Length: 180
Image (cartoon, rainbow, N blue to C red; front, side, top):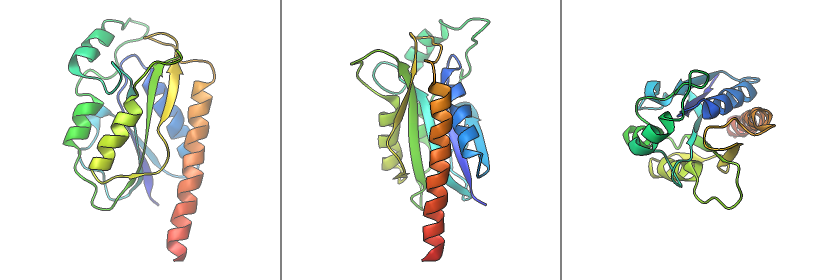
């Protein structure tokens, strides 16, 4: 059976919590591999039927070394920094192009304030398209209170439900492909 691969960048654990919840939803019907971006492969394996990519929105888009240093300063013993190496931006630059139009989705975590522009998920989707990956769903944003979090109420449940919906739709798409 094919699997889903989730690659995430998380500085204070909020994006990691969303990634793990998405994995729970996807994992109800298929194998799922979750990788922190520093441990993610630069080539998507052939048995991956869905690539899920997520990170925090920093300065209107994907994090950069300077925004990661700033965010790391918000870490505490209770909320230590998760991603301390390369970020999603650098991983997407190193990612080998998809030679088979692998379906991909993106998500981000962002401050729960109206009218704050920018989205790491939209920036990641654009970079994945340039690498030959195919959109499977619209980018999703999950909200945090303030810069450091925690996640807003209900966001973990919403992430889990999105993962389950992705799994259902992926199974349907695979069934259609096999019946052709």
